Amino acid sequence: MAKVSMVNRELKRQKLVAKFASKREYLKDKAKDQSLSVEERFKARLALAKLPRNSAPSRLHNRCLITGRPKGYYRKIKMSRIALRDLASRGEIPGMIKSSW
Image (cartoon, rainbow, N blue to C red; front, side, top):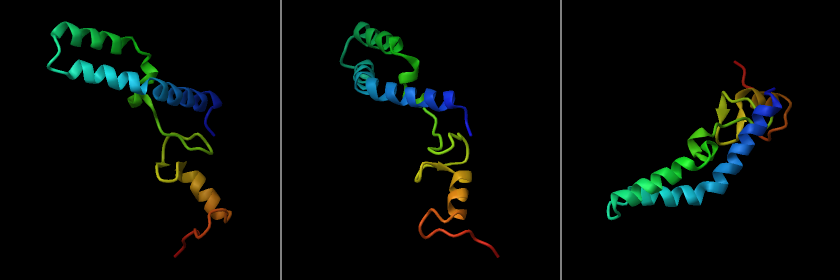
């Protein structure tokens, strides 16, 4: 089980990314626009740098919904491999059985 503070930190980052997504996209487009002057593009870069660091999508890290584990994460089911195995062993996932040979 991951620390609750790490899970909460990740949730906070997700909220910041969602909050600043449109502003970040606008400033990035403005900074890349070659038709604008160099000064205007530079101002857009400065404004982009003033946004909170945690509002960047690259700072997000996938975590298991059940345990908060950051590694061994399956994107499709948003769960770690260990949590998936536990649920499958208990029969809580329909149609999934533990394999043995």
